Every structure is written in structure tokens, then in C-alpha cells.
Image (cartoon, helix red, strand yellow):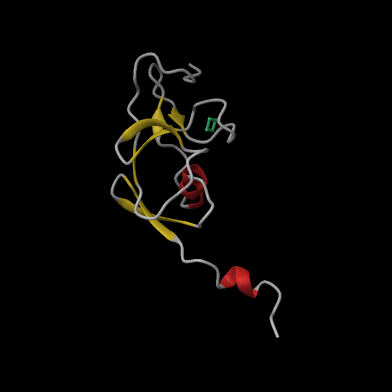
Length: 103
Ligand code: FES
């Protein structure tokens, strides 16, 4: 006999990622951005002129506010990149010509 919700509690093991050297866990199927927000990290880059914090905004790949470096590849949209075990995330440095600053 199974119990409702038991599969959810015993599902796949969480992934372990690092963000600027700090370990963050993610559930399989979760985006990088969702994992960061679930870990209490809501901003991972700053705007070019005003230095305003940016993280998830639209959550659907449109605004580019969530840019992050993933395994050494800058300019990745955290809301679209699926989390994987062992992934290395780092703060996105602002780069000339990138959109989405909003200031
Ligand atoms: S949150 Fe808008 S593109 Fe990722």
C-alpha cells in the first residue's frame, strides 16, 4: 500500500551546485534561478550604471535580468538553464552591450 505523496518525499536526490563557492541544492527539474531563489539568493549581478541588484524578474527568458556564469560560460539566463549536479555558478560581471539593465 502506498501513501499519497510518499513518492515526492523519497524522490531523486537533490543536486549539489556551487554559487561563488557556496553549496546550493536543487531539485531535479528545477532551473538554476529557481534553485538560487529557493536557497535565499535573490540577486547575482548588478546593473552597469546604478549597481542595482538583479536576479529573476520575468522568469521566462525575456528580460535577461538573470544573467549568470555557468561552468565558466557567462551570459546564461538562470531562469532557463536546468540545474545539474556539480554545476559551478558565479556572479555575472556586467559587460558592455548587454541589454536588460533597466537603469
Ligand atoms: S528572469 Fe527574465 S530572462 Fe531570466
